[in-house]
Length: 133
Image 1 (cartoon, rainbow, N blue to C red):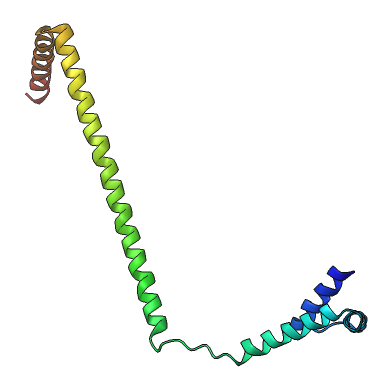
Image 2 (cartoon, rainbow, N blue to C red):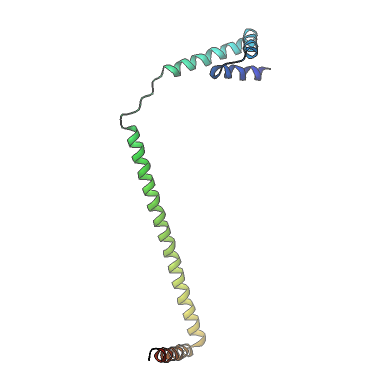
């Protein structure tokens, strides 16, 4: 019962109550001194907040909008920088992998690898020469 009357009390601060709820609340307030003091406290807080004036500086909205725009630009540049850094890492890793593969081939195959390349390129040169001429 007490929880229900507290909800009705809080509801009464924001909305109109039905006649049944008004009767219930008045009866509960007349019986419960704590509920009555809570109602007085809520009403005092409400009046204090109503009387308070909230003023913003004259250029508040323009400052906020310029800050939002600055953050948007910095987010885009941060994204571009992170993509570039990630690409650099991948490029260096790929280059290192290629160098390692070439070293492994040279160590296992020796100079035969270069002979193989020369023979393939020689065949390609004669093939392209026959196409163009």
